[in-house]
Image (cartoon, rainbow, N blue to C red; front, side, top):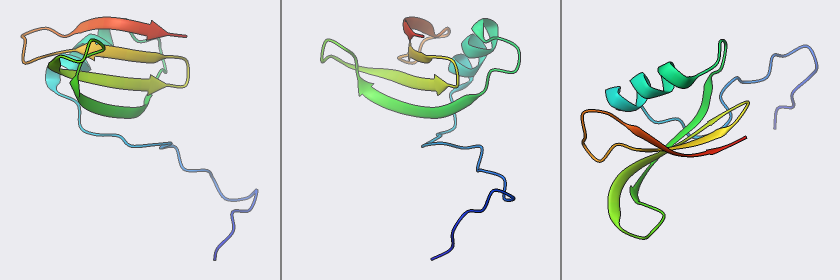
Length: 82
C-alpha cells in the first residue's frame, strides 16, 4: 500500500463530482466568489419534503449549496449552509 508523503501534492478533488447541468453551472457561476471551486457535486431525485424533483447538492471549500433545477430554464438556490 502506497503512502502519501509531504512532498506529494494532495488530490484537489475531495468527493464525488458529477457533471453539472448547464442551468446549475450558470447559477453557481453567478453567485460564486472568486476562486471558489466545486469540490463535491451530487444529484438527487427528491427534494427536502420527499417529493420527486431534480435537485443538486454542491460543496465548495466555503459552503454547501442546494439547487432545484427540475428541468427548468433557470436553477433556483434553495439552501445555503456556510
